[in-house]
Amino acid sequence: MDSLNNWITASFQLALMFYVVKVLMGVKYNIRDYIFMIGIIIPSNIVYTFIGTDTLILVIILSIIFFYRKMKFFSILAIFGSNIILYLCNFITVLLITFSEKFSDKIEYKFIIYIVSFVGFGILLSYATKFLINLIKKSYLYSNKLYISTISIFLVITFFILFIFTRNEDLDFQTFRLYTYLYVGIVLIILIILIIISYTVLREMKYKRNLEEIETYYEYTLRIE
Image (cartoon, rainbow, N blue to C red; front, side, top):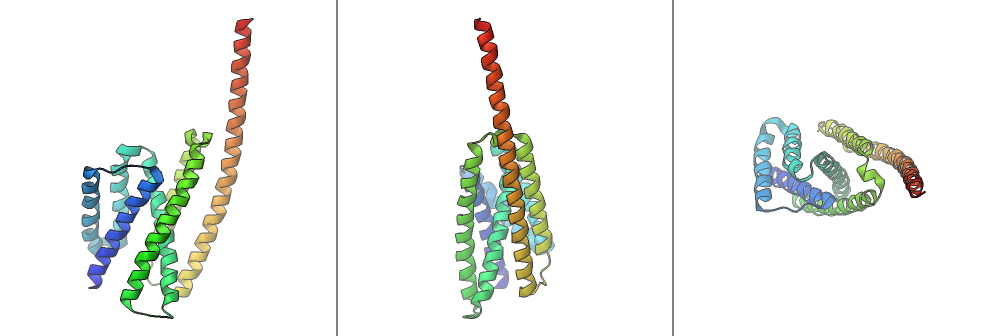
C-alpha cells in the first residue's frame, strides 16, 4: 500500500510540475506532448525504486530536453523555477500535516491534506510567479541576456541547495522547521537583492535607450539640415 501511495504521489507531483510550467510559460500541450510526459512519469517511478531521490536529476534533464524545442533557453528557467515552486509547496504542506497530527494521525487524513494543500499552494504560487513574469516581459529586462542568465544561475543554485537538503530523510520536525525558516529567509533576501538589481538594470537600460533615441533624433535633424 505504501509503495502504491508513493507511486501515486510521485506521479501527481510530476504532473503538477508540467502544469506549473504551462502556467509560467504559457505553453500549450498537444497529444504528443502528453504521451511524452507519460513517458517521463512512468519510467521515473520505476527508476526511483533503485536510485531514490536522484531520479529527480533524470527528470530535470529529460524535461529540459522536452521543453527546449518549445522555448529554447527559457526551458531551463521553466523547469528549475517550477521545481523550486514545488519544493516550497512541499515544505508548507509537510508543516501543515505535522500540525494536523494534533487532531488526527490517520494516513488517509494526511494524504488528503497533502494533495489538497500541495495543489492549492502550487496553483497559487504558479499564478503569482506568472504575474511577476508578465511584469518583466513588459520591461526591457526580458531582452537582457545578462539579466536572464543571472536569474537562471540563481534558480539552478537554489534548486541544488534544496535538492541536497531534502536528501536527508532523517530530519526531525524541529530541525526541518528550522531549515525551512532558514531557507525561506535566504530566498527572501536573495529576492530583495534581485529586485534591486532588476531596478538598477532597468533604469540603466532606459537611460541607454533614451541616449540612443536622442542620438538618432540628432542625426536625423542633421540630415534634414
